Image 1 (cartoon, helix red, strand yellow):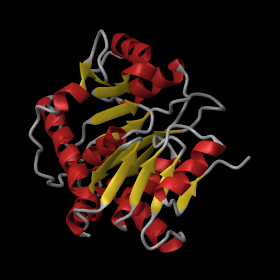
Image 2 (image 1 turned 120 degrees about the horizontal axis):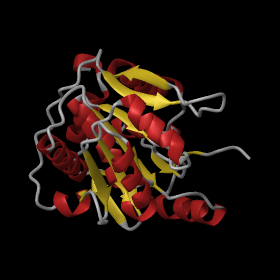
Image 3 (image 1 turned 90 degrees about the vertical axis):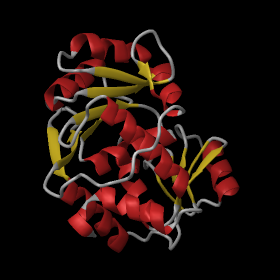
Image 4 (image 1 turned 180 degrees about the vertical axis):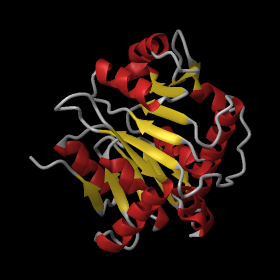
Length: 256
């Protein structure tokens, strides 16, 4: 892969499998072409706020298509992405946002609207609060997307740039930021493709947060032309219903 970065792998996959189903969520589905369109609109949105290669963004959201596509937009633009775990405390999230020096944070308003307001009030370097859904403060991404023109998917990330700052759980103190380059992210994808027993065409069910390990499995699934099915939480009945409905052939679960 030219420049050896995740963003290029995703752009290539969109070109290789345009009509295949890339993402399924609730009763919605996106083809690879539609996923590329959403990524392009998010890139246009981020550029309208002045975000450029090397800048940092963070996200606190449940599993939804926009959550995944924000990550891919960051991969393509060369942004530093920091996920906020849905089960993290307010104190940990505030520390992470300040420590990672992100410019913009995205939250899902229905679930984390109050926390988004705390972020905007308590994190000095934050320039914008973006939201999935309307709330009293911040800008609703979902209402803006329909008016945006998708930017071309031109990869600006460089292999040596910081692509991800993942924070540890903080069980022995404050969370610690693990700095991961775009080269390391793409190498992890290739190691997954070569070492895991993914089906030839994966239909993967993500029931754990994509802010955590499930999110790392999305790129290998899509590079193989597979389908990434998003669920919000886990119950045995829901899991089995998804397996039957979507013919799931791979997943990632927490052991009992």
